[in-house]
Length: 475
Image (cartoon, rainbow, N blue to C red):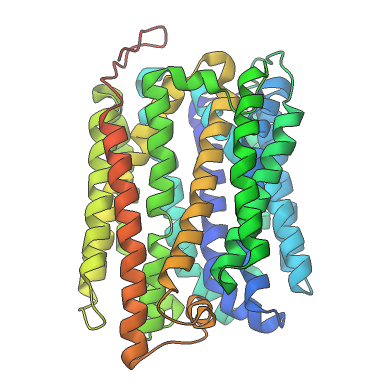
């Protein structure tokens, strides 16, 4: 079977769907995993944080590897590695093994996400990429919805191991289809930024361990020192990147206004929004007393709506450019956070559903338009590295988002209570519920402030002109 754009899009959407399902399923299964593997809460959290850390560190360089070796090769190998990691996760006999095998999953996932945007750019001209990115958004939201629904059902009926086993047949099929349908990309002569990778790894690892420890146990000399060390090392990292010819983070890319502002908007959206659903789930479980499955089902309508709307908004962004739709999407997401801020311990649950629908519209508008803008304005010789950079910024933003959510929302109650609520093993009532609600509200206010800044950057990106592949892109 020969390569085709539609077949390539199917494989990329399938990869997005698979990663989204796995992420959502793991979150819902944490209570069972913690119990069955006799793990402590801080270890269980690393099944999430470790995955995000690895993908954040490696995404940019794996995009560069795709430029060097070929995106098809790296993407398909990543899919295979992710599938093997899923099988090993399901066979884990202890929390240490599970975290280790999640890192294998993360490596495979990083290979996939770092090159998926570049594969789309390779196969679709600039004036129709928004439509393609709309379908990848459809894959993500459909996957998140499937994970929400299937996670509780599979864990309850079959056991937590099967949330990983379901990835195996899908992954095998996807690897075969990828070899058949994804066309080889031109190989670009370049070198890896080993020094930058090592320094960046130290920065992110120190920041993640330190911040996670602060969130779990409060400020201490060691965890505060690790965060400060990470902040101090950022300066030599950026100085190194500025002088390195093949830097892992191409500082010169930020000279292109639309690309720079689109990347910045993506980062701020990740920081401000990606832990919002986590906080609302804590509210529904910890304050309203719902079990994880029923709490998550209240958020499904937003995902479903976004899945239907995203392909149409992606197509619209091809005609209008990214600024209007991406900025409007940020506004909708900010509006949904404002609704969440206004809820109380006794608010009717339909308010949660309403806010979820508003956020679904926002994500359907923002993601396809902004992702398309990033790749449309990236140099064709650096599709892989820019795609990886975008994913790295998104993963770093996600890490920051979760650390802020855990830290701020748990200020008003003992941290162990907040962790137990997150894992679905406890809920709070009376005065403690009011105090925890105030903590969640404060965290949501921080999220709203970050989204407001992101909205400004999105609006300031300049007017974008979409044309044929050889067209010009103005500011």
